[in-house]
Length: 578
Image (cartoon, rainbow, N blue to C red; front, side, top):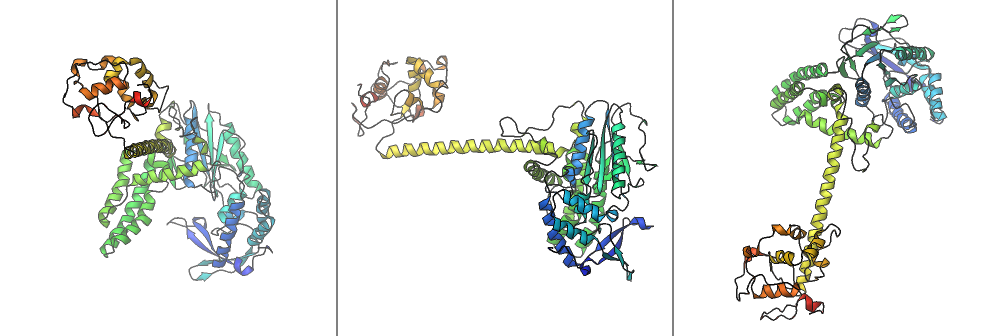
C-alpha cells in the first residue's frame, strides 16, 4: 500500500459470462463477471472500508450506493415521494427516464477516476494504488472447460470486484443537475432522471437530458437508447398523447407503462398490483421446493430456515416502500403464501405485516440520526421538542395519501405514539414513588407513637359549611402540591385529599342526612375547628359508623378529657392557643 503497487499475479482476472435471462442469444445478453484471487478480494475489503471512512459528508446526497444508512429502499422512496409531492399541485405531471449505459464499468478511464478521487479528498497513495490496480490487468475468458488467451487491459473497472460499485459511484459524483425542477436518483450505475413538469413546460427536462448526454460523452460513457426507458405519470383528466418523445443520439427513447426500478415494479398509475403479483408468483414457485423438502422428512427447523432464506426474503423485499399503500386484496394474497408455507412446515410463521412494522421503525431511527439523509427533513420536531410532526395531512388530492410512500408517515406516527407512551410511564413512576414515600413517612410516624384516629367522612363537609372561605383557598390551584392540612396550619393532619374540597357547598348533604356525631367527635370538631357549632344534640354513647369513616389524618399524643389508654392532644394545645 505504501508503494502503491499491486503484484501482477494478484491482478490476474478471469471473466465468466453469466446470462442475463434464460433466452440469451447474443453477447449483449451476458454479464461479464470477473473472478479475482481470494487474497485480492480480502485486500479490496480493507481498501473499501478506508474509502468509505474518507468520504466527505458533502457528497451527492442522492447517491445511495455504498453510503451509510442508505439502501435501494431509500432511493426508490425518495424518488416516489418527490414525484408525488409535485403531483399534488395542479397542472403537473412527472416524466421519469431510467438511463441505460453501454458497458458502463468497462469504459471508465482510470486516470480520470483517480483525478476525481483526489478532488474529493482521497489520500494520494490510495489514488495511486487504485490506478495501479486498474491498469496492466491480465484478463482471460473461461467458458466451461475452454480458456481464452490472456489480454492486458488498461481501461475499465472489473465488474464483480469488491471496489467496483463504489469506484463507479465516485466516478459519477460530479454529474449534477442544471435545473432545480429535476432530480437525479443514483445507485451505482443506475441513474434515473425525474422531471417535475408544470404547465406543460418540458424545456428544463429536455435540457437536463441533453446535459446528461454531454457529460457522458466527456467521461467516455455512452447512453444506450435501447436500454433507456421512460415512464410518464400524469393524473390530469385532459392528458393525452401530447407528450413529445425524447431522443438520445438520434434514437427515440421507448415509453413504457411499467418498469422494474431497483427491484420494485413501478407502473404509470403508481399502484402496486404489478409488484405484488410478481412477488406472489415467485414465492409460489418456490413453495414447490419446500414441499419436496418436506417429502424427504426434513425437520421443521431446517424447513423454516429454507422458508426464511428463499421465500420470506422475496415477500419482504423493499416492504417499507410498497406494503403500506397496497390494497387489502394484495395483502391477503401475500399472507396466503405465508399460510401455505405454515401448513407445509407445521409451525407458526410471522405475518408479513409484522415485518413492515419492525422495518419501518428501524428505518425511521436511521433517518432521524442521519442529518445528511434526503428524507431527514421530513421528520420535524414540534416546538415542544418532544415528538415529531407527522407528514402532510392535508392535500389537494387523494393521490398523495393513497400512493405516497407510507413508511415515513407510519414511522412519524410511531414516533409520536412512542413519546406519548414514555411520558405516561414516567408519570406513573412518579405517582408510585410519591405514594411509596408517603406511606413510608406515615409508617415512620406511627412507629414514633402517633395512633390512628379515624374521622367521619362528613367531618369535613361540616367544616365546609362553617368555613367555606378557607376551603375555597385550599382548593384553588395557586398552591399546587401542598396538602390542605399544612395550609390550614394543622400539623397533625399530614394528608387530606384535595378532592374532598372540590365539591360545591350546595352539593353537600343536608344536616339531617348526616349521621350524628358522638361525644368524642363533637369535642374534636369544636377543638380542631374553632367556632364550629354542633349540628345535632350531643347523644352520649352514640354508635360509631365504620362505613362512614376514613383515615384522613393522625393526632399527636397528649392529654384528652376522655378515658382512653392513648391520650390525645388537640391542635389548639399543640399551637399553645388553647
